[in-house]
Length: 411
Image (cartoon, rainbow, N blue to C red; front, top):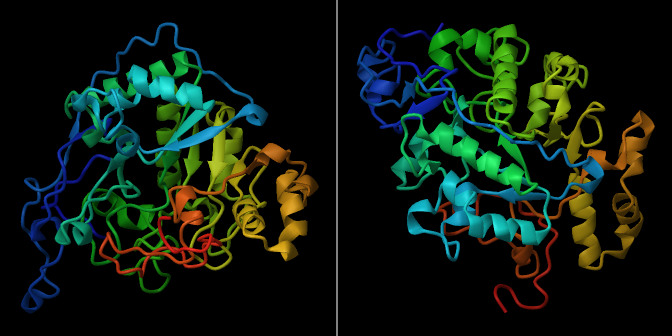
C-alpha cells in the first residue's frame, strides 16, 4: 500500500486541472535524507500539486456532425497543438500555442488545403513536466506523461485554466468538424508520471497502488516497466479497465472526438507477461457500443519481451505499420534487396493482415512521425545529432535508414 494521508491526490476523473507541478520533497512519500530512510514523509503536498476543477458540462453542440470519413479515404496529419501554431503566420499572438489557435481560420484553411481528412493530436490529456526535466531547465514538450485522463491540458488554453480549457477544446473540435476534419487523440494509457518506487505520490499511487499498477510478483515495492517510464498500468484489474473505458467514452460523448491512437498499445494487451490479442481490454472495446464505433489506432509495440506486434491486433483496429516505414525508407535509399518487402508494403501488407480477414486500411502507412527523424532529416543526415536536448546523442533511434545525399547536414 502506498496511501499517505498527507499527500493531496489529483482526482483521476477530474474534467479540468488547474496549475502545474511544483517539485518539492513534499510530493514524495519518503524523505530525501538517508538518515530518515524508512520513515513516512508527513509533509503536506497541497501547495505543490495541480488541483482538479469542477466544470460546467454545458456546451452548444448544435449542428455539430462527425465527418465519419471512411478508412480507405482517410489521410491523417499528426499535429502538436503548440508546435503547429507557435509561429504560424497571420495568427494572433495570443492564440499561438492554444486550442483556439489550432482552430483559427488561417490554420483551418491551411489544413484544408493540405487535403488531409483528420488531425491526430499529440497528447492533450493533462500532463506534467517531470522532475528530471525541470532540474535541467527543460519542459515536457511532447506530453507523453498523462496525469489526467479526462482533462484537456491546461497550458494549451488561451482563456484560462478553471474549466475554460474544456470549452475551448470543444469549440476547436466543432470548428474542425465544420471543415470536414476529424479529430483523433494520441492517448497514453500505458503509464503515469508517478514513475517507479522512487517517484512522487500524485494520484493513482495514493488511491490504490496495487490495483492501478503492475507490481513485481513476490517483491511488490517494485514496478513492472514495459514502457521505459518506471511503471505500467495494470490492465488486469477492473478498476484500471473502468478508468480507461470511462475516459474513452467521455472524450467521444462529451468532447466529440473521432478516434484514438494508443501509445505503446502492446502494453495494454499484456494480461500476464505475454501480449494477448484476446486480452480483457480488447474484449471490452470490441463490445462497447460507443468506443467500437470510432477510429482505433494502435502503436503495436512496447519495450517488453515480445512487444513488437505489428499485424496482430484485433479486427476493429488499425495499426502504425513500422514495416511500411522501414521498407519505404530502404527503397528510397536504393536498398534493392528489400524490393520484395517494399512490394508487400506498397500494396497493402497482405502478408500481415489478409490471413485474419483484415482490410488493407488496417495498415496506417507512414514514413515519419513524432518519434525520430523528420522527413527533412531523412535526406540530410546519415546519423542522429541529438545535441540540443542535452542528451548528447544518447536518446533516440540510431538505425534511421536515412541518406544524407552526400553531405551530412543542411545542403
